[in-house]
Length: 489
Image (tube, rainbow, N blue to C red):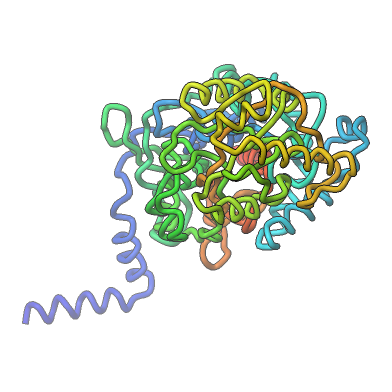
């Protein structure tokens, strides 16, 4: 009788709309902290280019009390070790080089290069705002080369190259701004939970993270949580979940690029897209560890197989070059540049090349036959390949279809060569956002107080990312997100 009475009472309560809702909401909200350990206006997860740019931009527009949580012991993420090429139309530099460009052309090439799988609105926002971002970075001390180039897989000469050491130029400039603007970067702080008012409804309230001492800390975000934690290129299990071919490949990513926040956001209702769109770049072949980036500027190099023969146009789409290398018997190629090409590398690239000499992943010689012997390639075959390529340069027509603007002779010693295997490089899929970087749920509705920026997102690059577009993406959307957050202060 007692049991029946209790059931009757509970049924009666649930039959009352208001009371029933209160009971359900109380159950759903039971895991929320009774008291927050910390409170900030904005919590940014990740200290790569996207997170740093968001924080600096927001602070520059008057927003205070911002914190960056970084799970690694170091700052910068993949940005710090990237090639650093930034794609943007540039009326100043390009006009001096007689290059015609526009945000519209950049958008068209981005959409086509990604097989029209990208969100056109996201692409439009990126290309229309990229040049302002170039100038914004320059205003903070980032120095770019006076000329733009076509970066590997970029398809057009609009890549801005930082003059210093890889993408770390950007990180140094933005970290200096964080110090100037009093934005703390808390390293060794891994976010393990994102709090929402209810499991699939309401606004995002904050996060829980484990600090450097192993303690769990809850932190409330009054305005927003911004997830800028990067992709999952260094997570073999997650990669293979979406593309089993990639389980055992090496990666160009830093060890922290494991996609931790993607399932956490899915748990609170966020939608994902394009998770099987995973890009590979020339890197370490199986069994090697030292990456050499002689492939960076297509106009400066040729690629050959172990027989010393070219097998692909070096300025093709990244997925085309990937498939061509993976089709080789041992999935290994070589990139070759001459002294002129080598002179275009910044100090970071040069350091990688010299390290490659020590590890046996790169070689240099005064003549092509000598270089071929060090590579383990038939000297006569390699000499013939380069002679044929140079003849095509003179004829302004390459046998494999390399574009005329990217035809330069390989003729001046010393010559350099390095391994070019295939490594997982970039994950184009991730969290779905709108062009304000607000996170969307599976119904296409905004999850309030939650933004995502950078490689953790999907929909900007489609099935194939153009080289130079990732750096443009993280800094452009980071800058715009900071402006958007500052409006809410």
